[in-house]
Image 1 (cartoon, rainbow, N blue to C red):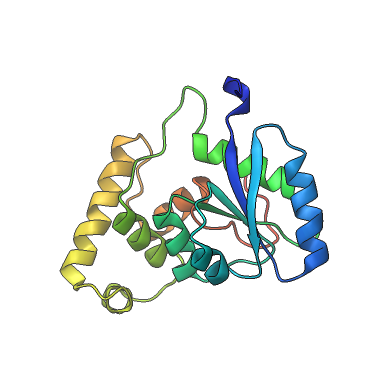
Image 2 (cartoon, helix red, strand yellow):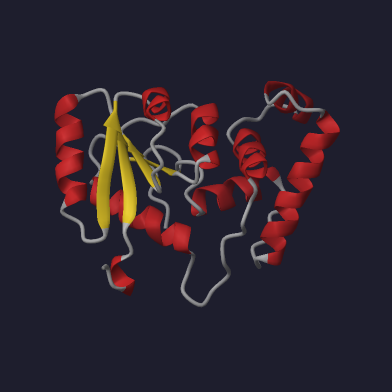
Length: 184
């Protein structure tokens, strides 16, 4: 049984390149408290397998709808750039997901709220456009968004603007940080 410092996390790896996949799996498997349980060439293939992972480590950023699909399964996406270390990227995502020690926590969002949050922050489209894309009424979309903002405020991390929600989503590992940027 793993100790407190070695909570077991289930990891899935997504990359088309078999060499990159092999390298990522080897590096991640060496970490204590990590179990690589699946790998696939795409998020869609991973979803078809029905895999339930805590983190999905990808070599390229999946589309917003794929990130949302992973989130509804409780899986945080971690994007590892070509020159980045998958271990460092995963460690950062694990820390962001746990929240700072003694500091404000990560709010518990319902699956539909996660989907709304991700869809909202990854684009600059207008609310009605995003709502239509999610097959949702605009007012229902706004209600979900208000509830997300309330939950962040209650967690001590207010996010009154779209930009603030984007920052919170990156901090919580819900969406990848901008490419080429370190996020600390």
